[in-house]
Amino acid sequence: MQKLHYVKALLFKANEPLFDSSAGIQKIMFNILAVAGILGGLLLGFANAFNTGRLLSAAFGLGITVLSFTSLAIAIATARYKTVCLIYTIVVFLGYFPYLFFNMGGLYGGKTINFVFAIVFTAYTLEGKLRWFLMSLQLLVFSGVCIYAYLHSESVVMMSLGFGFVFDAIVNMFFVSIAISIAFIVHFRLYSHQQKALDNQNTLLADANVSKMRFLANSSHEMRIPLTIASVNVQNVIDLLRDSHDVTRTDSDMVHLLADAQKEIMRLSRMVGGMLTLASASEVIERRRLDISEVLRSAASALQVHLREHRNKVKVAADSGLFIFGDADLLYQAMTNLIENAHKHTENDTVALCAVRCKDKIIITVSDNGSGIPPDLLPHVFERGATDGKGTGYGLTFCKMVVESHSGEIDVRSEFGKGASIHIAIPHYEGQFGGSSF
Image (tube, rainbow, N blue to C red):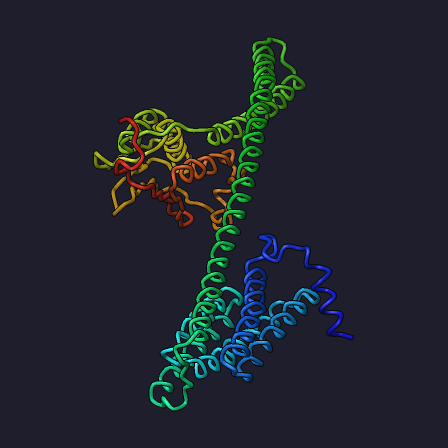
């Protein structure tokens, strides 16, 4: 009754495609293998029975047909493909194929192609360490079979060059080539299907990201206007109170409260500005060939006067001709962010910028001898909103986005109290993308 259940399961599910790409590569390969076993065993069984008269070989062939059909039915009914496939490959590949080899001409019968077929389908149908174990075992067994047949030729049953031999060779070639061809076709179709699904998913994610960034940019822009107006109004009230000749303690407290309110408004305004900057970095950028040393020098020159507030200075050490393919405006903004960040944590010292070529990378370093980064903050410095209180927490996030958009990498090294250094690696431009000079 249990066998009848498996047969019914196969018949009821026969309308389902055995080679449907959604089933998974292992299941599809086993289905191909089982179908080839059903048809191949049937043809070889009848061929041996009616053409060569080898009833034992005919019985083995028909037995493989029954085994293949039963295995396919059990796999479909129970969905235990791995177990069924393992048993099937051991019985057929390590049992039946060597039997065919010895009883159909050995090294001269062309049955070594079955060994190739066995190894290929084992690679497709199994997975993990079990796959490698069985493939290695098959190579050892098949090699041993060939060596034994060479040393003991009497163990091989030679076939006469009659119609049976020709028919067997054609059937063998036909089923092996068709099965392997279908396997490769299904494999590539499955790959194409998955690639198309991945491309569609990436497109949806990209569209969603663009929509998110546009919303963020629009929201940030709209928020900056009332914040600016509020800040100006608060400052005007403070100025009026300070200019008033009748200043009481209450007025003084009011000035203090208004000053605190303006400080918070300006902090919120800077955060909104950071959000707007991040949104702009995610938009489509225009790349071209540019010399990164010129970008570094421009950023350093622009901030020289600003650095004097803390009696700092900036030093640039970069060779000319360090070309990359990128967006000059974004990279300039990222460099100014890094210099400004170093300046905030440094007093009466030097912010050093260095750029060198190392094989196919341009290595950029921005370092200082300032206060460094607290150990608890160091693992999170590139996360959005992470700050030690001296910034908005968006500057380094922006820099990371810019560097990664140029196929680069960025990391930070710091010893608290002894300074910090930012290291950036961006691919060197060697004419592979085209573009005009900076």
